[in-house]
Amino acid sequence: MRLQGKVALITGGTSGIGRAMVELFAREGALVTLTGRARAAGRAIGEAIATSGGEARFVPLDVRRLDELRQVIAATAERHGRLDVQVNNAGAVLPKSLLETSEDEFDLIFDTNVKPVFFGTRWAAEIMLRQGGGSIVNTASTSGLRGQRERAAYCGSKGAVIQITRAAALDLAAYQVRVNCVSPGAIDTPLLRAARFGAQANQDELVAQVGRGLPLGRIGSPTDIALAALYLASDESEWVTGTNIVVDGGGTA
Image (cartoon, rainbow, N blue to C red):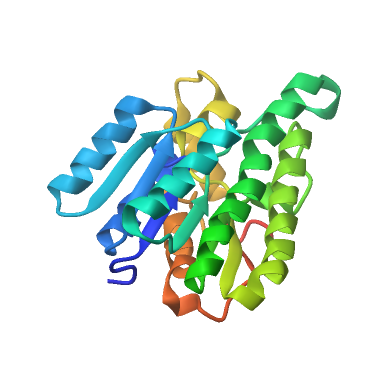
């Protein structure tokens, strides 16, 4: 098992990419704490993993409440005696153009996508440097690498995640705390379906059409991203820091 005995905290772990990370990390032997706002889903995920012999403890959390995020990070480390992996995955999308985006909406996106990544990285690193190292993985997006219509605030927030990751990696390298990120392309998640297709009835076909437009001929799955995060969380990537792994079926090529 690639994460046997490692303590991992994953924010935004109740659906989509985060849920895939939680399930994969637990199968690989990690002692997982997952957070999210969907309480019923979080508890169900934890129970299902426990039934299959793994460990995943759910803690309800809105990452915009930074004081609570800090408490969850500290409590996870205190419960297990260490924190080996922090995955800052929680995020939101705003399908609006520059001209349509209000100041409140801009603040909401940056309060969700950027500030919890910055401070989650900082607070996890404070624990990890005392224990001699650790791995922090941030979920960015290919939208942070290129422009996209009706996503001005979102693109800006994910670009910030990539740059925070790179700079934090340099600040923390001397302490053997690695900081990397994964940039998903089009991934079939509830978030993508809601943002792109709203309440349209033929979403399966619309999703398939998106996939057919990519070089590898299909849309990505949450597991595609979870596997990249697993590599960055594991000791297999011990000489990797400040890196952004793009997982997009060739879309940005």
